[in-house]
Each structure stands twice: as C-alpha cells, then as structure tokens.
Amino acid sequence: MVDAKGRNMKCLTFFLMLPDSVKSKSSKSSKKGNASGSSKLPPVCYEIITLRSKKKKKMSAEIFPTKKPASTTTTATTTTTVQEYQQQNLNNNNTIQNCNWQGLYSTIRERNSVMFNNELMADVHFVVGQPGRTQRLPGHRYVLAVGSSVFHAMFYGELAENKDEIHIPDVEPAAFLAMLKYIYCDEIDLTADTVLATLYAAKKYIVPHLARACVNFLETSLSAKNACVLLSQSCLFEEPELTQRCWEVIDAQAELALRSEGFCDIDSQTLESILQRETLNAKEIVVFEAALSWADAECQRQELTSSTDNKRKVLGKAMYLIRIPTMALDDFANGAAQSGVLTLNETNDIFLWYTAAKKPELKFASQARKGLTPQRCHRFQSCAYRSNQWRYRGRCDSIQFAVDKRVFIAGFGLYGSSCGSAEYSAKIELKRQGVLLGQNLSKYFSDGSSNTFPVWFEYPVQIEPDTFYTASVVLDGNELSYFGQEGMTEVQCGKVTFQFQCSSDSTNGTGVQGGQIPELIFYA
Image (cartoon, rainbow, N blue to C red; front, side, top):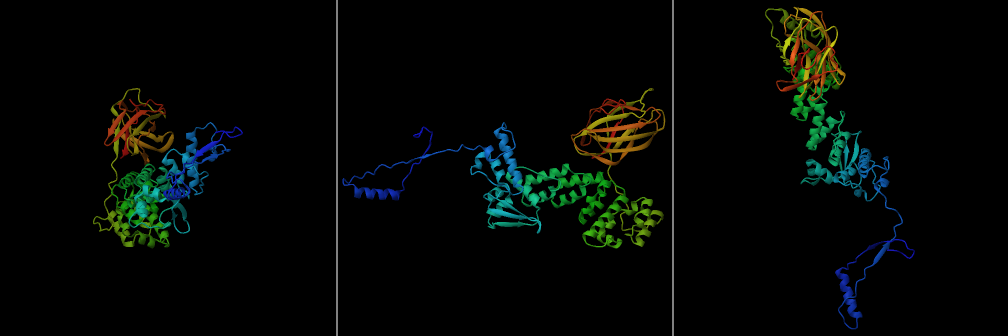
C-alpha cells in the first residue's frame, strides 16, 4: 500500500465479529428505523487500520549485543547469548531486554536456560544455606516439578504447600544452583569443591542422573588423599560402587591414605571400619599413628584439650582394633609404648607378649593383617642369554603399557645375572605423559637363575584405565644378565588386560618383542 507521498505502508486488517447482544440490539433498532419493515441487517463494516513503521526491525544481535564479529553465524550468536544468560543468572541479575525474547531461541532447552535463576515469571523462591550464609534463589514450579519428583510432590501433590518462600538450610547455595542448572539447562557443572554437596542435593530431591554424574566425577578423581573422606560419604549416600572403589584405593595405598589430611576428617564409624580392615596394605605402626592423629582432631572437634587421656577417650573401643602386638618390636618400643595412650598394664602385657614363652591374654588383636596379594604380569614367553648380551652401563630400558581397569603398580620384576650370583643397583620410574608418578632407587641380589627379582616402589602407584604409562629402569651391574624373548603385545592377568608398546625413552634395546622389565607387579 502506498500513501499520498508514495511511501510504502504496512496494513493490518482487523475483522470485528459482533457479539449476539450487539446483534440483537442492532436488529431492534433496524426494525424501528426501517419504515419498510425489512428484517435484513445493514452490512458490517470492517475497518482497515494502517500502521506506519518508521523503525527498522531489530535483529537478535542488536537486542543481545555480543563480542562476536559481524560474520558470526546466527547459531553461534544464539549459543553465545544463552551462555551469557547463564553466566548472568548465576548471580541472579538477568534482565530480559525484549518482549519477544522467546523467538530468539529455537529449542525449549535454550528457552528454559534463559529462565535459570531468573526472576521473570518466578512463582516460588528458595532461601538456601545456613543462617547467616543464605542465598535467595528464584524458581518456576512447573520446570522444577518436571525435573524432580520431590518438587512435583511439593508443588502439585496431595499435601502441596502454597508457600511463596521455602527455606532449605541443609543444602549449600552453590550445590542447589548446580542442581537447578541441570534441571533448567540439562547441563552438569561439577567442581571438586561442590561435588559432594551437589550429590547430597541430587539425592535429596531425587535427581538420579545428576547423582550418577556426581558419583562418576568422584570415581575419576579418587585418590589416596581423598579416599577416606569419600568412603565416609559414599556410605552416607548409599553408593556401594563408590564405596568399593574407595576400599580398593585404601587397601592398595593404605599408608598414603592413612597419612592424608582427609583421614582426620572421617567419622568414628568409618574409623572403626578402616581399623578393622583385614586387607590394609600398611605397617601397623602407621595405623597406630594415624589413629592418634584422628584422635587429636576429634578432641578439637569436641573442644577438648588434646591430652593422652582425652585421645584414649575419644578413640574408645576403636583402640583395640589396632593390632599392636603385630608391630615390629622396635616400632612398639620406640612408638606405641611411649605414646602415653596405653595403660601401664597394657604396655607390660604387650612386652611380655613379645618375649615370654607363656603369653598373656590381650584385648588387642594379635594376628597380623593379611594385606593384599600382589599379582604379576609377565610379558615374555621365554628368556635367554648370550655371551655378549645383556649389558647395562647406565642406559635406560623402557616399555609403555596400558590397562583396561584401575590397578596399582607396586614394582617391577627384573632379570638378574646369567653368570652366577651378582648384585645390581636399580632405579625404577613410572611416568604418565612425561610426568613422574613414582620412583625408587634400590639394590637387589640375583642368584644366577633365570627367575625375576622384585624391586618395589615406596608406595603403589595408581594406574587409570585406557591411558599409556611408561615403565623405566636404569640398571647398573658388572655382569651380563638374562633378557626376555617372544614378547606379547597383550597379556591377560585375571580380570585385567595389559597392552604393551615400545617407548621412545628406551636407549638400551628393550621393546615389545624382547629386552628387560619382564614383569609388572600390581594390585587389582
């Protein structure tokens, strides 16, 4: 349509439908006013309204300016806008700048993402956190009910409450936000600092997929440093798979786990379960010292002075789970006997246990822990020796390997002299992508046989599945030694499959087909 000045005009036509009441009135008036008595209604007029549009229609990039260059595609702009909204919403400061914002997003997921932690259309608020550290967060009942059966019962169930503000003191604000982000945006955002609190929130509000993601995150980040704390939490959250993973780490790397800071943070029930563990791979003096460290921390939690009497008090019956009579005599005499937590009678009886033919009865368990039985992965089918091989002279023998499930490498099995008994010095290392994970320098004595001789790391090294690690050894000895032949690229050891490949670090001839490092000693 063109106006008098030749300008284009946009036209909108409104079809006005008259209600029955109006029609009846019109009918009556027409009868009175129509001398001829005709029953026909006059024609209804449809008004055409012309709207003048002087402003150019704004695009999404103008409504939501981004730092992207002008050449960025519409899809990239939309994705960036959603991410910017989510970042704003974490601080609850989002504002909708256009009444037609829904049209900017092609999927319901993107539109829901805009509403995450957004006051727009919010019909409920949560006051989350402990008093003094609370955060008020907006929510939308329908979205929350779709994402959680607990929220559904809370808002739409038979006992639904119509409160506009709900207090949640037992959940941390960051964890509650992480759960809301999953419900609104279908995104999982976990960190080491918030994953346990998020797992608690996911369990409380029955969001199983988020809870599973939290457990997977914990399993992949599991180490000796946090295994004891995660063991305590996994029992609380009733996650048996995570509990089993924690026990695997604690058993294999017991001394590292017991000396970790996290051990002092566990509850008394978890402490007792660890102390009575039959498969702990640790010296008993280490177990004793760890128990005293926990007792010291517990005294502080109970606001007690850290005296020997109070340590013994907070340990309670857990004290008798420490197998003190199985310690080496030197460890007992120089450690436990002088700690002050044992009574004089207990100290005397334990000394008699070590020395007397007629041993007294003790409340302490006197049978040593079984620990873990090491397994061996042998990668050669035969071994041999020749008059001019195998010499070392300080050069490195190395091989790469990977496993299909988590194991703990405790050491290597190495060949010895092929010319009679001899002593070797061995420096063993274990690396992952060039990062040193474990090493040890020790000596071993070979008897001239073709057997392998174990050389141990100070602590077992945790090996994750589907990643190649480099095992290296630098041997120093005057005699020729045996070497492996007919090497295998894949070896099945129980439930663990090992794969081998050559290493660029090897400078003394060792490879997949032959050479040194015939055995990997591990716990699984």
